[in-house]
Length: 588
Image 1 (tube, rainbow, N blue to C red):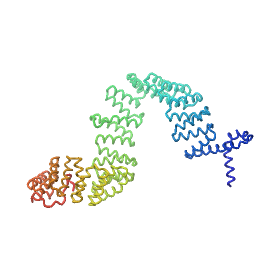
Image 2 (image 1 turned 90 degrees about the vertical axis):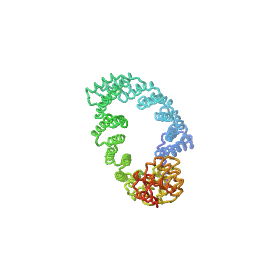
Image 3 (image 1 turned 135 degrees about the horizontal axis):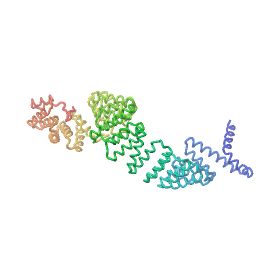
Image 4 (image 1 turned 30 degrees about the horizontal axis):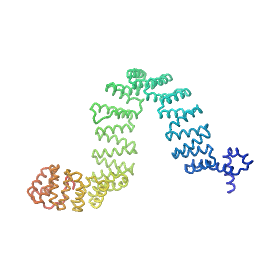
């Protein structure tokens, strides 16, 4: 069996290498040059294996086989060509050029060798060498369609527009005139500001297809771009006589009237453009967006924007991108509830559109519709069970509607999906801290707040709430004091933070310092906050200033503080025992 395989293998090898081996057979046999014959066999085997490994995607192995071929016979073009190709795939252009050039020098009439060398020069940025070889390629192969276009592109990159046009002229003589050729030529003419030549190219297309309005429109647009608006206007009118609903003409007329300062006519023409069938939807959407400036727009301009959008909605009721445009405009106009309806239409029809779901959740949160936020985030999780933001909003919504157990569950399930987003992870831990606090799971709450602070040390909202909860429980007051000192250092005139800091000091029985801090809270906006004023009274009382303490308690009641405990303190003129006091935000 092994002998049979060996025979078959060499039959294959010799059949592949028949040309090269048989070419030298007579010489080998006559000279009995066994060494050369062995080199031929090894060359053929290596060349075969090199191609095999290349097809398998093993570029290193393939390159090694082709390099061995070159070591055996350095002047064989095929091996140099193949090795250059492998180097090119590895983006080793310097070495690739060396071997591609060797292949080309050995056989300069081989089109593929020259094409590879051209490609290598272009990839390495040597456009000059590339252009010289392309010129040579066209001399040898004048029927090579792609070489004309490639040479034109190379000339343009070299800023040789004259050479590029000459190449396109040769192309035209060989293959005839076409719309694609007109576009390519006019790209060059217009870049040079040569509108007269550009119009001549368009006129050629008109002569070829005199009934096609597109070319007349191109001619008119060239006049307009050159500043000859009246010439352009005349052509626009001629086209409309034959095709009154041509949306592209109405678009050009809209620009014409805009430049003339006639905004009303410009809008009328734009409206006709939006209603037309010739202009594609994506361009219409761009046109509507270019017209949008809701924030600083007059009422008339807003009406115009909404009119254009409603035309799109009537014309394309099942196109979700139109509903998306409408929702974006509504959000800019702060019409959040109507925008939300549009987003719901999109999620119903394209439930796998993640960005729309995300927009919907942010809108629910913006509006403060937490029942809706809970429903929509829960629904979103059915389609995107790996998205952290859906879990976060679901947890936030559950917390706001007082489903604290559900909030904890959802936040715990989702937090691992935010592992690569430090900001979002910190928000998760903040929400978990708030939720555990409501569930009276103090150890878990404290741990969550600590993790949030570690991830985002400058979120002073967390510092404040966490410190206050610690003070109410009279636990870890040293930590609470440290956190509040950081808060005050960052925000020395924030009345809420000053109030919490004063309360932490109060619970630490540092009444004198607490008084100094609460006075600052009072003068920094706290005099109108019934809770801060009550705290001021409590601290005054503990500093043996009973008369002023009672005055502050009365002031707090007049500010709307309806606490029974506060009323009792006023009646009894005594602080008694304060079990739980709210902070200046009303938290307890």
